[in-house]
Amino acid sequence: MENSVRLDSYSNVTHARGPVARRIAWTIVSRLFFQTHFPYPSSWKRTLLRGFGARIGRGVLIKPSVTIKYPWKLSIGEHSWIGEGVWIDNLVDVHIGAHCCISQGAMLVCGNHDYTRTGFDLIQVPIRLEQGVWIGARATIGPGSVCGQHSVLALGSTCAGQMDAWTIYRGNPAVPVKTRRLQASE
Image 1 (cartoon, helix red, strand yellow):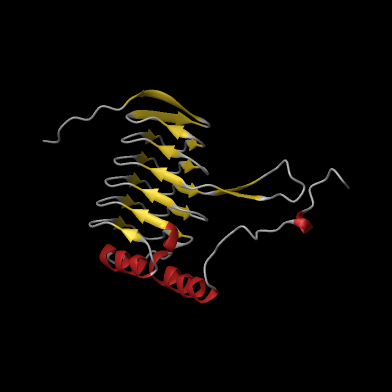
Image 2: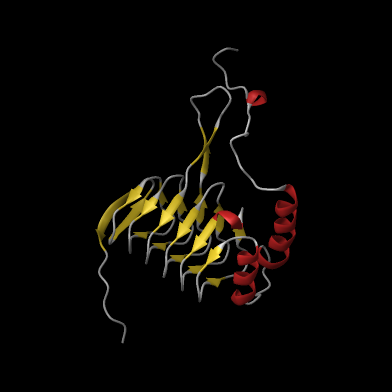
C-alpha cells in the first residue's frame, strides 16, 4: 500500500482554527443569526462579526443563510453585499474589497487537498477580491484566487487563480470573455 491514498495518515496540524471556546461560541452564534432564513438586520450581523474579530466596513449587507467558517479570518470592505446562501469557507484569510457583490449560493473556498500525497495533505491559501468585484450566483472561488478590481465571475463559473481587473470570466475553469464597462446610473 505504499502508493495508495492513506486517509488514516491524514493530519491537519497546520490548520489554525483558533481557541476551542471561541469556535464553540461562533458555532452557536452562526447557527442562530447567520445560518438561518430569519432576516436579522445586517447591522446586527456586522456587530456580531466584529465581536468575533472580523474586519467589516460600513454598510455591508449580509443576507440570510450565510455560512462563515472563521470570522476572525475575514475582512469585508464598505458597502459590499453577501447574498443568501453564500458559503465563505475561510480556513485562512479572505479579503473582500469595498463595493463587492457575492451573489446567492456562491462559495469562497480556501482549502483543498494535495492529491499527490498519500496523506491527502491539507492545502490552505488565502483569497482576495479587490474593489467592485462581482461573483455570480452559484459561482466558486478556489484557494489562492485573486480577483482584480471590478472583475466579474459569471453564474456557476469557477475561478482557481487570477482574474484580471475589469474583465468578465465565464466557465469551468473560467476564461475571460469580455471587458467590463460601467456606465453612470441615472
